[in-house]
Amino acid sequence: MNNDSEEPTKTERLLHYIITRFDRPSKLVLASAITAVPTTWFIVYVADVPFEWLIGAPLIALFGSVTSTYIVSKTLFAFQERIQKQNKILQAQAAALQEANAELDAFASTVAHDLKTPLSTIAGYTNLLSSEWSDLSPAEIKQILEMVDKSAHNMSNIVDEILLFARARHDEAIDLSPLDMHQIVKRALERLHDEVQRCAAEIILPDSWPAAVGYAPWVEEIWTNYLSNGLKYGGHPPRLELGAAVEHDQIRFWVT
Image (cartoon, rainbow, N blue to C red):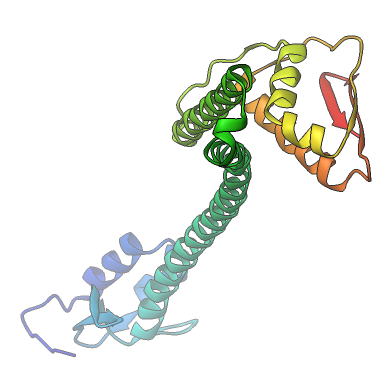
């Protein structure tokens, strides 16, 4: 606190400061009845940071006392409101970050699953070639190499879709188009060909699909993921039925 006789000490200067500084001039309607002692300039520190300079003095009115403490508390109340607003903003940002991290965790799990299938296929066929090359016919070798090439192509597509997903998270536009669901499901089943054969799964497809719009590579990934889970947990041997139905303005696709 620092007294300075050169600073304004007149009551009207103090009242003018208070009225222009705060939003409750009605507190000072009896200004003609208010007197003031010499004023004091002081600075308020918040968290060791200078917040703002204030001027105050004990004021005596017919309706009671209005002191410099009132001025300070008004300022700190405004500062507290600001802090509360900032806290709400930070809480919202933290919630959004937590949600984004959860989405990334789920996406990472899906990507790991999707990449594991073609990698396992490539590893299996390359091991077969290295161990039984001399016993395989040229036609069998060609078929195996085609499967390896297809698996590598699937991996390349998955990486492209990951990059596209990253761009989509930055609000870049994704081109949507009519979906050929027959071809999309066919590609998904081709990717899972070995799993389907290994577990002797029965796959039942509808005669037709309703028209839908979307991004085909992502829809294929969804089908692949659902079908893969169905093959694992759909019984022995698994029996999977795919279908779709129009519900209001949306289309529901399913694997049962």
